[in-house]
Length: 447
Image 1 (cartoon, rainbow, N blue to C red):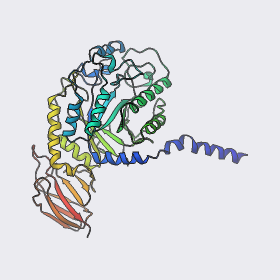
Image 2 (image 1 turned 30 degrees about the horizontal axis):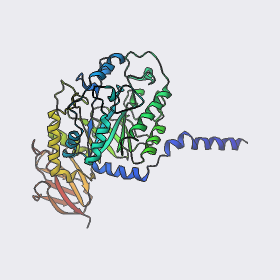
Image 3 (image 1 turned 45 degrees about the horizontal axis):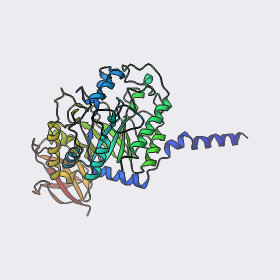
Image 4 (image 1 turned 120 degrees about the vertical axis):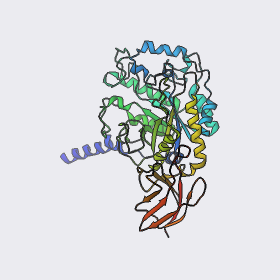
């Protein structure tokens, strides 16, 4: 009798929480999508909505303690008459970006599509046109994959468990709604997004951290103040669109059901901003980063990254085998400010010359170093001397036995390369503002 009870208890554990936690296996469609994502390397992030109107970034509701009643007034004059989906998608495509991640609902709770489940949405504004539909139609037309950002937290709804969260304390909410109603609400909205807008490349979640402690440690799955029903939500997404990738900006190791791992304002593994302290996983990787210091439109933020800094971000991300998701915060009228356009166009021109060393590559046999990094493709190693100390560079423990050719990617000019005792000595060019990464191609062999 005791043995039977023990056996039943063991079976319960194996078929319950622990088994569910470890049971996710990506579908063939999902595996193919992961491969595409890994090869794509470069995407456009778009933070835009009524929060753009005050010109103080996307956290303005929280940062200024704007009440729900007062913030809702922004709905009445969000009228982006200069928004043009074709122009936005064309800018991304011509800039060398392979996918777009669009804000559909940020922490302020505003939905950028024609949703049945909230009256705080784009159809209630003077604009009265579905932004997600326009972007989805144009992405499908131009061959750019569309990913959808969706906030898990909400500074507006009463059924979001705001009283245990870390943000949105000053929005004037006093009623405590039913948390399960909020979970149902999110499932309903995600079902709309994955049913009415064609093929979606991925769902980009944010806000899980609102219900977690702030300390920077590699947290566990249950280190949260609420039950997010996360596997139910993930399984719903994969059931509706099996190829759809899932990422969650929770700053911890990936949870079962997630398909890629993201790093905020950081190249994977570097943690310069103090947000991305999680370890690098075996999933596809993505760095999300801003062109200035703001995600949403900010009138006073003029700290724009130089083209050289953007190349550095893209190349170092690729050197880790990851992608760069580069953000813009369009103006409330729907116009993308010139500083963003100029940099995206510059990067597009750079990729026309150097894209071979980025797209469809994997990370180098060495992790990124102070001098720069490596990327690799079949039979080739690309050396990116972003910050060499002099005019030569030594690669220790070089894994290939033969250098068939060594040349500059841009000009095909031969480069001096000496391989001896697994140590490669290369002559390199110093970076310039116009040419910040003078990539060297090594055609290699093992014979």
